Image (tube, rainbow, N blue to C red):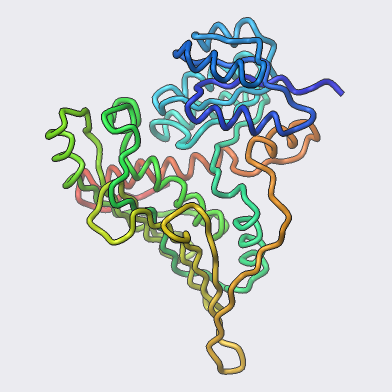
Length: 346
């Protein structure tokens, strides 16, 4: 069988895309693109990739690619995705899907017109613990989920401080669109992506702004955001995300679900990127706490999953439609924060 030919645009986060695809026996990374010649040489030499471009449009024009991964600053997600669909490629796009929901809709329309796939790299779904947790929730162990809280806080953790992450024109926002997007998707995924009806949001820039002024760095986004989402089924979700907050933990990630039959808490260990989960129920009149024991079977990465789905013509998860729901929520949360009032969705 002919190998799937893949191109990766942006070699910051994109270096992980390259490695992920190369883990699939029927996929090859045929070309890479980045504005940095140094990155092109580093990644190209490391993985023996012949096609190297400082212009992504040139790569799309010259290489006959099946799949394109987009791992650039958020501002370029939409135009590059549109160009990739025009070139006949399936697209895996880094989160967030785009700068706003209007761009997301353009991406979905272009994918449909080209009859190509669009997947969003909601990477926190793609590990063994997350997928086993999803099986538990889908089994009904929690019953009817009516409340959720999902958070990602950093005591001090502004990525690439002074770079594109902290500039609204390039990123679209701060920790809400960078970190919150992951926790938001994760909670919605566990809840079955219920239909949102309205949101209430607040954003703050109390700490990072002062640091930026002191250090002469560019920074015009929030450093902390909070929000409340109401769904058509009556459920409520709270979301919190920060790059700078005066709290105990260096890094705090949690997603909590409460249902009428049980509750669940997923949390990071030792302020790092390993996770555990517990389930809380009442059984025969007793309060019972259960710690999930994980299997030893690793889950495929998002890159492997996307390539494999295309090769075997199977549905993929983390769809563009789900990415658009997240984008609409992010837009509404920022709009609510700006107006100080709730914002309806749909």
